[in-house]
Length: 485
Image (cartoon, rainbow, N blue to C red):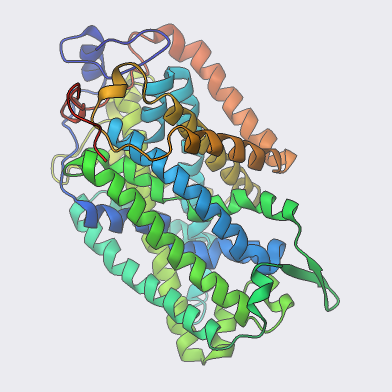
């Protein structure tokens, strides 16, 4: 296959572009295939980190959406089913550790792939510190620590863990994942056994209006909250980042994506419903002090146990995010997104553990520094970036069955092209409802990225930003066989 200036596809060995890419990457070895559906689901579910999303991000939604939080997350979950279908199809059609940018760039051209990479980079760099900053609050029953220094320590620990073998990390994060699911189950049980209001508030939501008054949650507020809700459930899609390290990726990637979404959404949504019904009043619900509610429903011992499980969940999330996000940075260097010297370093894989150590450090160390920055506004920006990234992936799915890609073996979604087309429309509407500030910040970052593309990458397109898919992952043409489901 060949690449044109406007559309980039995987190159075959022997072509000039392939030779240049290999030289740029320093001839580094390929990532090692060592995990299946179970290991991939454990890692991806840990990256979705349902407990840390539940206990760190959801409380802010309670403040703005009241009892409408569960409904908003449920709607986001329905949208995510369509997103999961698009990721499953594109992730098996183009299995690359580059994830979204490799999929979109291969199908829609290098510029689109570059913009998607920048959107994913926002998520890569900002989400782990946001999650890590909640650690100190949940360690408070045992020891009082500075939130920022604690978060930085968690990021450095996650970076050290990310340098290890992926299979070992799958089991370590799996153990932590069990503990966080137990914590979520305890919260759900206590909430459902201490209900204070009718389940009708889930369908007709209300929120605290102050001075003991309540007000209805409007449809507009729910639409605005969908970006954050997508952020809460975001993580299932990162299974595609592990495509180069999965056995039989064309079968296991789609299974991992769909299993992770189903399990993760349930682990988040069920406790959210329980907390909504069990909170003693709307003011307490809006405060979002889940640990305090657990203590009021039980005793301090149970509250301490849940808090420690949440702290472990946060640490677990940081580890997995560093692992998976480093694969995106590694892949971008392999595809020559940066100056040659940086590409050579970031695409290097350690011989002992088979991990991209420089890319891991590039994600983890700046993450530790960002723990000392005010990230409130960046949380909103991340929600916008996630929604915009999903729009690009849906657009990629719309063009995924044309030309040479039409007959390649891949998992194929049902109801194509209706599902990706509907996703584009709904997600564009969600973006339109977001704050001007978050849209402007995201727009400035994307504009700067486009400028970098125009001034640096495009003039060097023969040697830089050559999006690749490993040769052994290229699906053979299936002229006589139907697409795999």
